Image (cartoon, rainbow, N blue to C red; front, top):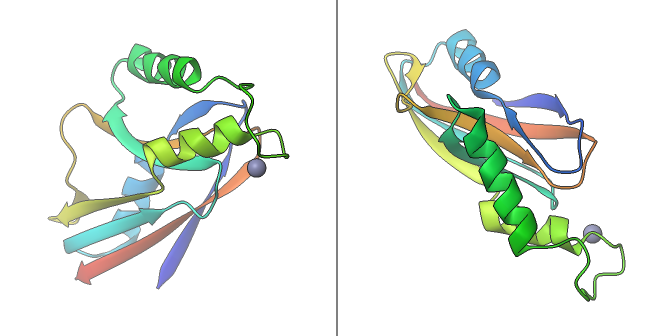
Length: 133
Ligand code: ZN
């Protein structure tokens, strides 16, 4: 079975911490040993894991992405959001996370971020849990 999480973003570029939502979905699912695939079905958003204890980390990543991929730089894509597409490709659109003892296997400082690069929008995250009860 496939689940979906709806994410409402509030800015053009934003990292939304979804660790809690994904953890709750895994608990409700009842799978004890396995893995979860998180998949973003969009071309201007992505997903990544990084430190979520200190909010300055996500701020630094967003600032550096903005510096590396400025909004207007002679791109050919007519829609005007070439930078959003490029940032989405840089961070990637899928994650696989192990599940053990019914819980996500994440490091102490790790959190899961939905990466918005062309918000604000209402987005979807596809969640596929694979494993044994
Ligand atoms: Zn576009």
